[in-house]
Picture 1: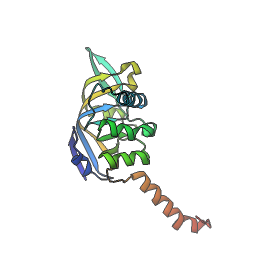
Picture 2: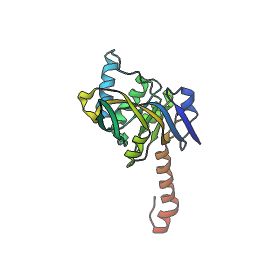
Picture 3: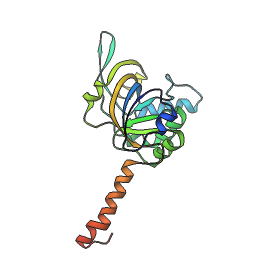
Picture 4: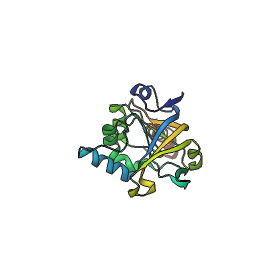
Amino acid sequence: MEYYLKTPLSEGDVRKLNVGDVVYLSGIVVTARDAAHSRALSILKSGGSLPIDLKGLAIYHCGPVVDKKDDKWVIVAAGPTTSTRMDLLEYEFIEKTGARMIIGKGGMGSRTVEACKNFGAVYTIFTGGAAVLAAKGMKRVLDVHWLDLGIPEALWVIEVENFGPLMVTIDSHGNNFYDSISREVYRRLREEIYPKIGVQG
């Protein structure tokens, strides 16, 4: 299925998505990598508030390439960062911020699957190596926070229009595309390949 969604995303928006669905997203996307995840959780644990309410928004694992023209930031390229780097923090991040969609590449693990199921979120992937294409879906930079962390690690608040295609690889029902592929590969090895080469699986 193909969906055109707009932030803020509701739980209903997310619960209807399944692994393999394709999403084109409009609204607000906020970039956040390792340092931003750590700082956000530290602030929230201490009872503070973040510079932007992330509830219902999409978090993009991305360190954008930016330029400044006439005192305005412009996104030049915005390819996804490997998401496993954020995996240890993502459960708590989704729980505490209310973010509904995570965008990245490379997949995430069982704790993120659990968070998506428990709190109504999804993990989607954007094609790696298509950083300029990603930037084309970004209309303008609305704000930027935590530049002291460096441009790649800052929170970039970006207005997007039909940003995608984003493929759902972890849905809110406990399904993980990469786990399914791994199980199928192992099944075929065990049932089809190993017997042909005399290996016991």
